[in-house]
Length: 329
Image (cartoon, rainbow, N blue to C red; front, top):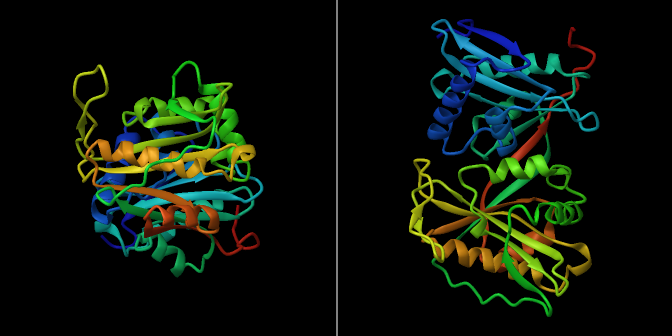
């Protein structure tokens, strides 16, 4: 394929035949690179729709095969639009990624653009560097073996832990989540739709969603775990043995979201919740656990390192050079 042997198309909403083409490309890139090129937020919107302020850019070869995709979110008027993208591994080095970025930047309201690169060795990381983008935010992925010993969790006085009850805990959990992540623009902004969408995913298991309650049955903290990939068979009390869906790679557990109300923080509840969730993941037969944490969240880093987690990889958000005076509209 020559650098000119592809066509770019722009859409506000993906057509019926474009959705499976995008999903197939994402899977192909994931298999080749060992890391998914798009975030969970983008994947959920691709699956369920609902994004009104999104622009999809697609690169097609002459055989009408999708070889590049970019998802542009223009909703953030403060920080600027953000893009996540991927290119077929067999079509890299032909200018497709650069063409996609240039095109979506021309579609932004003010030419400001941020780009997520998932994984230190990802193609997006190399692209951002080559185009003169600057780092603005980093998420560290940490991992630990579940074969290594786990201390006994020690809950603060008057606190107990149970599992999340669907149809009962949603409103109270959202309140706690908003308070715990008041300074986190993405997590703290979750609403009932965002919560329900994730609970409707095939990986969701309420047995791995723990909430800490005080004597008044007020939720004061939580630990939501997640299982990625593999075929993990287990059983819950009173249920027949069942298995988690396989995604074609070794299974791994995740500290998906963990949070504590600010007024009860500092008494070891976060550590206890983390250990309860990790013990649950180990009970499923999982060999390893992972998590994501902001690079500058030093207290969280200290906690996770004390629990045996070490650095595994880094996701980086880049900011594009200011081209507001050069892009034609």
